[in-house]
Length: 204
Image (tube, rainbow, N blue to C red; front, side, top):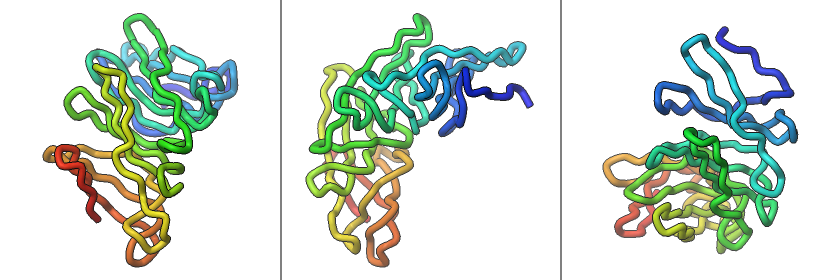
């Protein structure tokens, strides 16, 4: 055991750890000073644990996401909080311990995001479990260089459609994105899908 978590400094860690600059970073879904989770750092030299950010309801709450590294900063998602209380996309600078709310989700463009972000070029791609045009979830793009959010795909409303309720994030492989849904598909119990950012095409 390298560290035993306690509620006051973060409890119920979610997702994988992110390695950056020789240290490990992660998030907890609960605990911390506001009970909405924390960003923590674990230094392998001595295995020192430290809280770097306490999530708040207005700027992002209850993260369920592995953080991604882009341009020396960490990016992640919260499942709640933000301006619309439907989740947030955030940026964290390990060098300055600065936390910045980059986008607040809303039902139209997707709500309650979870899972890991995938980095492709200057953009981050992820999924929201609810919302979108069919109220069944959404796949989105966030361009870091232009601070632009774009809804790229709305999952199907029909239970036996091409997949609905995405969860678990995205994986970039061979210039395409791969993920899975909790429901939908031929058997109604989920699909594994591919999304091509260059062509904006979705396929089961």
